[in-house]
Image (tube, rainbow, N blue to C red; front, side, top):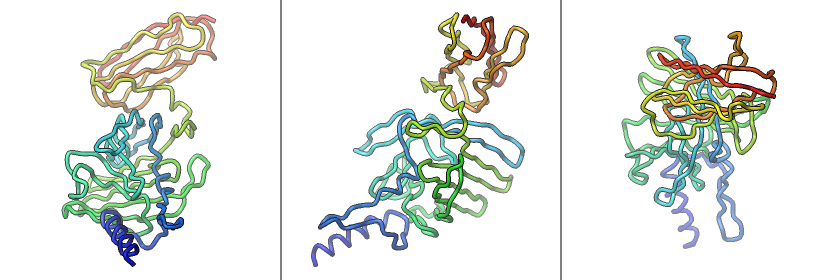
Length: 312
């Protein structure tokens, strides 16, 4: 009897900091040991090296592409967090963790929603069932509801999904997680209009889906440069492929294209919205003939062109 009371108290204590679950079988007994089902974490597979490319579009016809990269991990108070190069859709922060016990997704911050987690903001709970809602200790913070637990099809793959919504008097936000992929879609609406972000490509645990240009550019240094710059490619001359670095000092749309001596664009290497930082991009010239080529970077009011020599 005493063991039953202890287990019951532990479960109640755990669920009080989570979504209000509706009896989903999350625990199983193995002899005298309770085993937690962690399969829900597959809705948000965080791992170093994973890359996500999203397309943003709004009702004002403004659109751009951007990439979210998991660049490293860090241990804070015995908890493992993953550090991103920029925000996920829904403005989910750059330092995240998925709790293996609760299935909760937390964002690290200077303050939190509840006293039991003073430096974390509860984003969503991946173990929720439809219509479960968060218990948020701060009255001004809107509750999150699990509004859909059906299926989605992306990259020709059918997957389970979970959609979470948040409402205030003026703003509505929705985030959809796809099993084995992570955030696949997000919408936002307020009095000024609507916007949506959809996953168009990703590189997850060594497997590439969707947009095949995903791995051509790498954010190699997050320190904010003092100015924009475009580096010389190396090696130069080169036989089939070459790399070069470029720096951007503030968030913005960046386009880098390669041109032949007649001024014709032969390849677009970068065409997306990037946060400030130092990047390296690879140029594959294996399908081109020998000769002189030019690569040009355009972002905001900055434009620079460099010359390179392909010799086969």
